Amino acid sequence: MIAEANPVACPPMDGIMVIAATTKKGPKAKREGQGERTCLMVLGMHRSGTSALAGVLQLLGVALPKNLIPADESNRTGYWEPLHLALLNEQLLLELGSRWDDWRPVRVEELSASRLRFYRDEIARLLDGEYGGMPMVVLKEPRISRIVPVYQELLTSLRYKTDYVMITRNPLSVAKSLAKRDGMDPGFASLVWLNYVLASERSTRNSPRVFLSYESMVRDFGPALEKISQRFSIEWPRKISSVEKEIAAYLSTEHQHHLAGVDLLMANDGVPDLAKRAYVAMLDLEEDASSPAATAELDAIYDEFEDRWLPAGQVMFAELRAREAKARLAPATDYAATELRLVGNVRALMSQVDQLGTERDALKSKIVTMVEHQSRMEVQAVEVGTKADRLRLEIADKSRELATRISEIASLNAELSTRSVQLTDSRQEIAKHVSQISALQAHLGSLTEKYDNQGLDVSNLRGQLAAVTESLQTAVHELTLMQESKSWKIARALSKLASPIRNIRGDTRGTDK
Picture 1: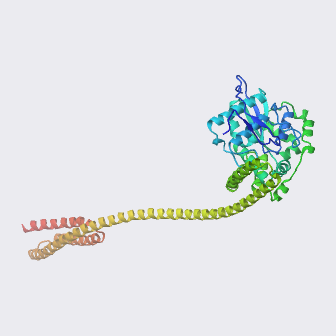
Picture 2: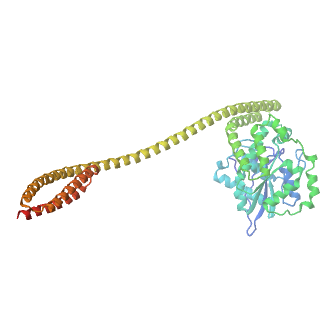
Picture 3: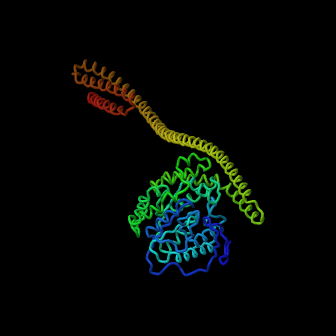
């Protein structure tokens, strides 16, 4: 933890060795009664055109900070960065175990509440000192790309409307520039570039932003500046037409170095594939800032970056710090030889990382295949389960239907038994009546003979006998139908049969008298 009252030695600020002294807290930067101001925050990797963009904005009348990092051989047109704020940002990175040329992401949330409050107070004090009450300012300091969350809420509390302009440059061009200035290995520089790009893009997704490429801006700055003004609904303090010549001279090809095209980037084996993919995605965002495919690609790159490179980075940076500390203790160190060894070690580590990445990709492919197979099996299991559920429902329905049919059959059997008993009783009744009819016929025959002998008219009795016989036949027929339909019609037949029998009995009684 760095004490607030002590001076802190910081690494070169884009080539300048300086001493940062933390100062006492000044007055609050927020001014009472002051309206909302605009902060155009330029984000991007070192050597990516951030200085060129900031210089163009100041030509348009946007306010620059008062205390700038001076121009040097590496950037003769100027850095346009607030010196003291750059030192404070580097101090913050050091406190988080990082530095400007570290390609590992930093975790701002690892700062304690008191230290975070300290940095925000210091940033507010420095912003007030650098810009005062200017209504439109440009804030360009590449390290902010990695610690955007520290600035976002603070600028809002200071009543700044913050608009983000993200500028990207071909990572091969950036690597060449850093190789010339700092002797940095191209692969290492590409990873640093990737870290800045991923961090700044992810942390500004919910904020107003514009994507530019350095190459398109220097080729034709007019559309780039129009895009910024239209997207953020701002009017430049100076019209573009009034400073067009100055901007063209400022962006002259005389100041452009280490140019590289996309084809040259893709053909270079020294630049990791993740950096190449990220550059293409950023170019897509320049065309469509809300492209879901581009942001999805950057998310995938971020995940792979954490999986493939960060574990090796932890080991490598720990070793670099140890060697740097040892080198500081040895006055006669051969720095050139040490640098060559370090570069060799870095390249060896990068080769190992690539190999591990290839193995990881193979394992991922196997896992994907297994997951797809598992998914198919799960789908089949769901289909089988659905069919089984359907069959269970059908079986339940059939079981209920079968139970209903069994109940109906039992009812029919009970009714059949009842009808059988009724039929037996009816047959017995008919047999009794047949017996009676036979007796009556015999009696009638006897009476007929008697009446014939007595000379009586028996034609009426014969008619009655014919009617009884016909009724008997009808009863027998209906009895047969009842047996077939198990109906109750027997009772009606018997009723019809009983009526003439009663009549006959009445007649015979009358005759006997």
